[in-house]
Image (cartoon, rainbow over all chains, first blue to last red; front, side):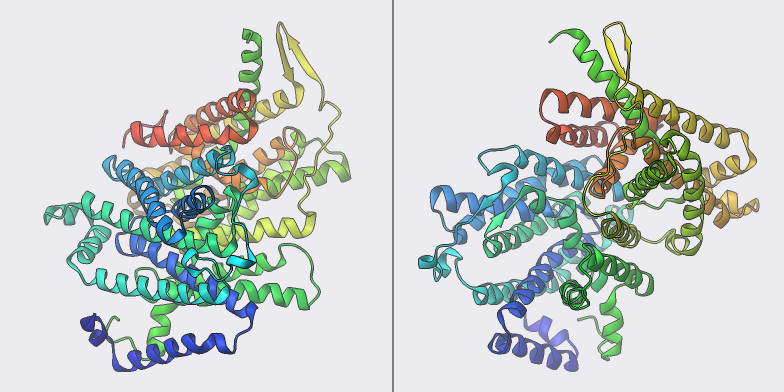
Length: 333
Length: 289
């Protein structure tokens, strides 16, 4: 930990501390709506980080991360609804199930040498398969969805993950921060360097005696476990789960745009990306509403154009560029 | 269940599958030559469906005929798109191409949503409810015409790649890019032509889809995934593979939606995709690299 801290340039440490302090006290002045936006920012920064670990460091392109978030959310919600087991325990069951699926995807992909776009399609196939299965299972509520009842008398039970936006604000902030620290720590570990070696040139990595299968499997397992935790958070925040949303490819895409736009394979990329894209989406709703454009889709057209513009102008993401702008570029934080 | 019920379902699946196959052929050509993953493929198919719908509603043009002008316009769109935008992304990493094309897909779907709204637009052709009766089989006329149209377009494309100089040059790019550049082929222009041809395919397929399905923006994502599944199952880089893959997926969808539930039809396609990836990664018709 202290090593990570001292590796950061002085100016970076100051900026980071100021931003953190601001985020800690921000809820005092923020209204409910703004807090809800921050919850989403933290959520996408967190799951983006989980995906970044697998793609940005280990180089494995997953387009089905909604699978792990959805499974985590569903398992915790089902345990809570059917057996009264609270989500703080249920999250471990969610992690177990999600990593089992992650292990299956990883084993098939890496054992049979399915790479690149093919691997991405494998992950999509698993997510879509699960989506349709959940659509047709009565036990999980089917296509009609699963609702976590809101009970005013229990709305303070933070130990059951029931509570107002503030609970989720601080929880989300903690998760996003913890994920960034974990990524930073892993990226400087032996495993982190092995990931980079496999990402850059698997043949060379194998020649050096790196067990590529093993390190890639570890990446999938960590990533799916982390994503499952995020899924529990967002499920109990939204109080509902629908297969058509939880497992949909558009959800997987939402998870991966922030780290790519922010800067793949960097520690602050997913956070920067989430801070750009989530407010952009929300801001566009507000702007199109103000302008009286009620055409459905107007907001998303601008969002899509923005994605295209950013990836054309800043293909490495915004963070590497921002880092230079802030004068932090000498050493990789 | 009597045999003729199976037969009817299977024949319907084969005919629809041929149109799917033509759509996937466009993806296969782009993916196989330009090496760009067109994640906006299904979106283009739906744009073509709306174009065919509009041509029918305003001019009374049959979708089987309107596929010609639509394919021509889509060729130009594809040529322009590759020249102006996608050429800069050739050879870049997959996730960058992915974001670019997903951005494009989001723009297209929501543009359609703004213009046409979320409701499905059916096209009622004069022969929509006619069918041929052959022995125990009842075959929808609309499906037969669409499938024949798909076969004709696919054969034309096949002939183009086999027998024209440009087609041969494009195949050279796919086989050995460095070699193609060394002998002086204009790679950029050939890529633009290829992307144009891919979009012409998907444009034609979209027009042919109109007699079979109602136009709706919501179809686009499913079409994109469908095209990818077909290309992988059939075998990347094999033109016959795209059609065979289309038929396989068409039949499996038809059987699953008839015997189980329509909502479960693509489950089997994805299961098939996983099986093919694991057991025969080169696809049913592909050759091992």
